[in-house]
Amino acid sequence: MKRFEGYGVLITGAARGIGAATAARLAQEGARVLIADLDEEAARGTAATVPGSLPLACDVADRASVEAAVAYAAREFGSLDVLVNNALARVDRDPAAFEDEDDEKWRVSLDVNLLGAMRCARAALPLLEASGRGAIVNIGSVNAEQDFGNHAYSASKAGLSSLTRTLAGHAAARGVRVNQINPGTIATRAWEGREDELESLATRVYPLRRVGRPEDVAAAVAYLASRDASWVTGETLRVDGGLLAVNTSFGGAVK
Image 1: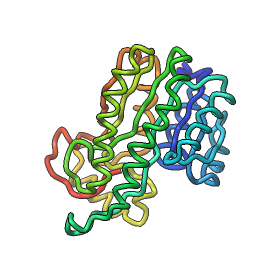
Image 2: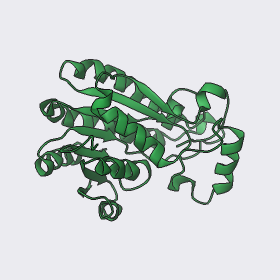
Image 3: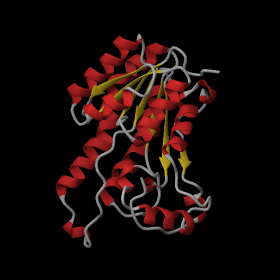
Image 4: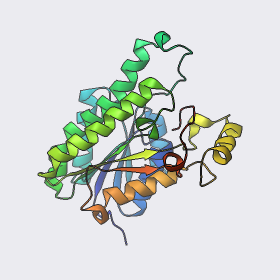
């Protein structure tokens, strides 16, 4: 069964990692996907491997760029049915002392991770309502729920959790569902060259004895975006290998 046959989908930060895996999963189930990413060349490369997809340069920190991407998706696909807010600002390790935190790091984290999702949702909401089956899925992080360091990143993802709940309440009367996924450690390119660290996390921290794969998150997105979740809104689904259910402390960025 192709749950997304005839759907138009916009995924931000879709050139690599979770975004690319989600594009492939939804396309496999029949969706046409706009692979929106700041890196246009990478978006083109991913689109070449995902049937029915189109690439587009998009900066979620820029309102005009976001609105152009939303309009392009609706025009090319005939409707916009699903928005996946996945774009992510670079995650850097915190300095030793909190008072040495850089304002610019905080500004970028909030502007991309939180305000970027807001801009996309704001632009897409009328089209999602018009589709009659609209859904927004925000990609958060377990950092929104527990202290794993990375103050700016964590605060932006906690803000995204709040936005998910409040927007779900606002959008419900318009027939649009809004949910969030909070992944644990996912083996993306951010961990390249740190494979030993990933292996240590898998055996030391995660009850399921492995770190996550982008496809694990993509499968959860497919559920929340589909009509299988038609009575689910305002929820946060952890895709974290049991991390928060079992462990109480762990240091380091996880996505």
